[in-house]
Image (cartoon, rainbow, N blue to C red; front, top):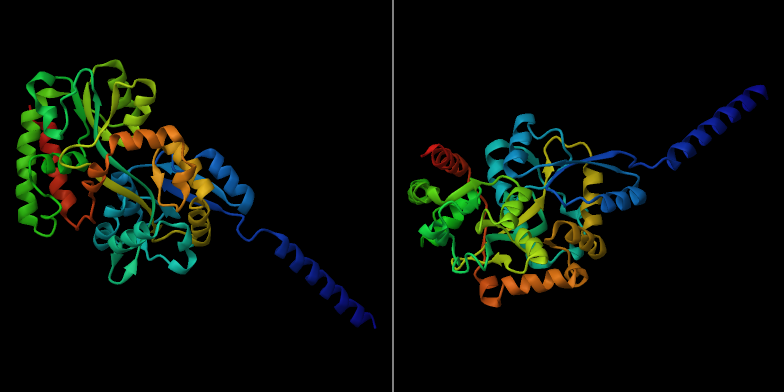
Length: 359
């Protein structure tokens, strides 16, 4: 009898322990997110943590730094990252830093179908899909229309009247934008290294020639916005959201889609190869793609997302500025970034280094 009582006590302790374990949130963990500024606002993180018990650690970065960080660790250190969709398939082919997406874990009904399909297609490698879309937008020109009203295309930044008064980044969007403005098609040359090198060489010559007009090569959003606010710079190559934020304070400054076409980008969700919290990552993706949550991100980042129906919840002023910068013809003329083939970034890096070093 004592033996049976002892067995009963053991069983009771085991049952209590099992209940306690089952009552503990299975996802009480941390999601390490490598992303852009504004994509994970505190109010969104707080809401996510309250609903799931998952903490979110955010590391802010950009395309070049994301790939460099993941390359250095073989895809470790983070559970979810957000490179632009054109930086996924090529980086995976060259560095093997991501793991395939399990699309059964994604709530596809929350995405704009065409954008989801396009991103899946552009991030596919050897039959596996490595990315799904999140935030999208464009880069082009931000112009003080009272001081540089005739700047309509990237090449206009090289006009002699703007000596020392323009700015752009020494990054690949500048190379691509100038190429299109020069009547070249860099995306068509992606598959031919020799042809792409020739395009980049022509762009390099133009950027060196144009260097006298450059006040500074900006590196951060706050920097270029302050230069435009102060009037030190009257026209720049930058993102649409920067132009719209400035326009809210000064109606003379606004974003202008270049005649050759604005450059369209989509920042995707990808899973780093050595990430340890895939379940939490999928929960975050599905959470932020809910229209009401996506609208909270748009309010912070200023860009729209691939969330179906979220645009209806966006601020009316933002929608108005978007329509002012993008008449229908300019929307149709957006040049969407295709995947970057392995090796092209080395060509671009050499061009940027030589432009920077030139006198």
